[in-house]
Each structure stands twice: as C-alpha cells, then as structure tokens.
Image (cartoon, rainbow, N blue to C red; front, side, top):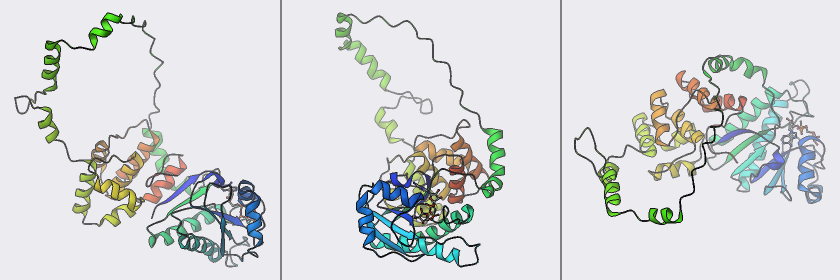
Length: 351
Ligand code: APR
C-alpha cells in the first residue's frame, strides 16, 4: 500500500526495481534514460539491444547492472501532442504495465521517475496527477509493494500554491523558528580527581549505598506511602501499541484499514501491533494518529507514548497540527504538503 513521493536522483535509489523513461528503441537517450544508462554501465545497453524495442505504454525488464537495484523496467511514455491523442491513457498504461512486470518479478519496492514530464513534454502537474492516481489505483489491490515517485529537483506547482494557501498562513502565524542559544561560556574545567579519589569513588561506603536504596524508593503522594520500583513499573501507562489497538477497536475498523490509511505496510504494522514496547519513528507514529482520526489531545497522548511531542518550532509539527486541527486526515494530501515544505513524509520510513 505505501506510496511516497521523494526528491532524489533515481540512479541513487536502492529499490528492487527502478523504472526508466525510455524511448521506443530502448537504446538510450537523454534525461533519466541517459542517467540510468550511464550509471548502469555498458551491460544494460547490451541487454536492451536484444529486446527489439518497446511500444508506447508497454514495459520491458532488464538487470540493474552497476545500479543499486536488481532490475530496470523500461517503459515508453507518450509524447504530449495537446492531450487529445490518447496521451493520458498511454501514460496510465506505462505505470500499470511497469507495476505488473515488477509484481511478476517479486519486487517489493519500485521507484518511478515522472514519465513523459521531460523531453516528451507532458505538462508537469498533469503528469504528476496521472502518476499518483495510476500508482495508488494499482496499490489498492497489492499490499506487498512500496512505490516511490522520485522527483528530480522540485517546483511548487501552481495548484499547490493555491491548495496550501491556508496552510501557508497557519505556518506564518504559528511557526516559531528555534532560537539557537549562544554556546554556553565554558566553565573552568573541573580539576582532575586524584588517583585516591578515583579509587574511593568505585566503592560506596555502606551508608552511601543504603541512602541510594532509600532514594530508589519513590514516595507516592497519592498513596501516602512509598512505592517500590516494582510497584511503580506495575502501574505503567497504556503503551503506544495498546493505545493503537484500543482506538482501532473503538473505531470498529480492521488492522488492514488502519495501516492502509496510515500508508504503512503490513510488516511494519505487525511489528507495532505485536510488540507492546515497540517505539516507531515519529512520521510513522503521526501516520497512525492520522489513520485513527485522533484529535489534537489524543495525538499528543499517542505521540508521547512513543517519546515524541509536537512543537511550534518545527514545521513538520505545525503542518501536522494544521491538518489534524482542521480534521483533514487524507494522508496523501498531508504528504503533498509535507513534501512541498521539504519535510519527512508520513508512512513507511523511506529508502
Ligand atoms: N532521476 C529522477 N528523475 C529524473 C532524472 C534523474 N536522474 N533525470 C531527469 N529526471 C526527470 C525529469 O526532470 C522529468 O521530470 O524525469 C522526468 C522525465 O524526463 P525525461 O527523462 O526527459 O523523460 P521523458 O519526458 O519521458 O522523455 C523520454 O527523453 O531521455 C529521452 O530517451 C528518452 O527519448 C526519450 C525521452
């Protein structure tokens, strides 16, 4: 299920398969085609020569050679001729045929460039929309694959300009850039303890260890008398995974619905679900808060169980606060906004 948009050079992405925006000859070219052939080395071209080309909208597979991937899937996108010559259908077919080929070869991670959005002239925003829709449609029925859309550099699309205008205002109103305190004046270095002091510090005199034991017993004001460490540990709060389970039950949703909404894969969810002491990364913890439709207080409570908090000096935190406080739980829209602000995305941890 997971789908991530990342900013990178696709030749550096170590997915099981990377997709090449090739031309019908499959004999290399410029753009991402040129970059992939350069990074893969001559073996890739030698294998491509045997394939006899590829029609638009279809895909062919080769080895990855010197690239950090097992396979290269070559697909030929449509040349943009104004949008009335079946370009959209051909572009959708590129994503579908590439993903079917990847699935047939057991790939768990696949990375796409933005097919046809370069030399073939497909308008960037439309190419982006077709890529997202085509990939998400395929992933609806395929739980064992994570797909990355690798954008090379980034331009804020005009639609995002409009789409996130209110988020921009929210950020301007609430973002408190972290103040970096001047480095503390170095206090005079403490004198080195003498050899005798060092030796003595290894052994606590009897009364010292008795005092330490006493300190280890915590007074509990509510109960009046001190609790032992064991009793305190027996009163530990609900864990992160216990709260996730409780909220799933309260919502009456299945585990699968939860991890699909959170854009995380089954493997990662099982780890969280089966280990009461599992502490996820912050983007994963927030993704589950979004999936469980938590309000701000519940989100803070869930994050605290994984050791995290939301602050006003972190753009990621404010963007999350904006979407949760406006009760917009569309994880792909949240990721678009996070990507726009160059922040970590929600869901499975990235490559
Ligand atoms: N990593 C990721 N994306 C990249 C990279 C890279 N190293 N290099 C370019 N891109 C991006 C471009 O910015 C663009 O958004 O890939 C997208 C597709 O651009 P092109 O590579 O020009 O592919 P396309 O528009 O499909 O045109 C294909 O160009 O290179 C020739 O042989 C190729 O004839 C074919 C045509």
